[in-house]
Image (cartoon, rainbow, N blue to C red; front, side, top):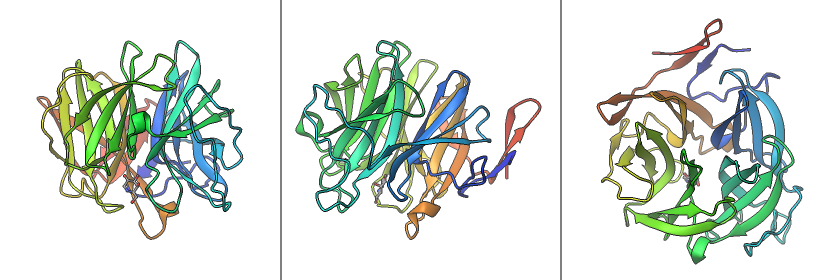
Length: 313
Ligand code: DGJ
C-alpha cells in the first residue's frame, strides 16, 4: 500500500477501499492514530480507521450507524438515529476525545435531519474503546442555541472545549465541557459575531491557542482565516488570512499536532456533486514568527525506514 498520498484524492485503506472519514478528526492513542469521520454510505454515519504512520490505514468499524445502540444520559436529548419516515439523519464533523477521568472515548458531532439544516444541534456518543462499541446518547441544542459546524479541543490539563457555529452560523460559540465531557458546562465566548465562521479547528503551540476556520459558502471553498489567544477562556484576536482565497481548495477538518513544532492541517476537498468522492488534503503548517502559513503541496511521501514525512510540489 502507498507510501505516497496525492492531495485531493480519496485515499484508500489497506484493503484498497476508499476511506470515508470526511469532516473528520484524529486521536492518538496507544501507538495509533484513530481517524474518525463522516461516512454517508448505506446505513453508516461515522467510520473509524487507524494507522501507525498516517499512510497505511486499517478500517476498524462503522462506529455510528442507523442501528447503533442508544442510551439516555442526564442531558435531555433526542435519541433518534433516523427520521420518523425512516430516512437517515446527518452526523457531520465528528470529533473524539479520550476522557482520563471516566476512561471513555467521547464523540461530539453536528446533528441534522438530513433534509435541511434547521435542527442545528450537537450529538454525543461514548465508548470504552477507541474504534468500536460506541453508544449514541442523542442530540440537543446547547443552552438552547443553534449548533452547526463544530470541533473539540482538549487542553493539557484535561479541560475540553466544544466550539460550534450558532445563530445561523453568524457567531462561533466556545463552550467549556463538564469534567466527563458529557455536557457543556459554560458558554465561554461568542466569537466574531456576524462573521459567519465554519469548520473550526483549534491547536496549541508554545502555550498559545490558534483557531482556523472557513467562511460560510456551502461546499465551495473560501479564504481560510486564523486567530490566536493566550487562553481558551480569554480573548481571541481578529481574524487573519490563512492560505489563499480558496485555502488551496480545502476546508479545515482539524489540525494534527505531531510534536511541539510540527502541525498538520488536515482538510476536505469537497466534491459538491458526489459527496462520497470528496478528497483529503494534508499540508504542513509553517510558522513565520507566530503567523501560521500554508503552502500547497501535491504529494505527501513517507520515508518508510525513518517514518519522516515529506511534502512535495
Ligand atoms: C459547510 C460545512 O462546513 C460542511 O460541514 C457542510 O455542512 C456543508 N457546509 C454543507 O453545505
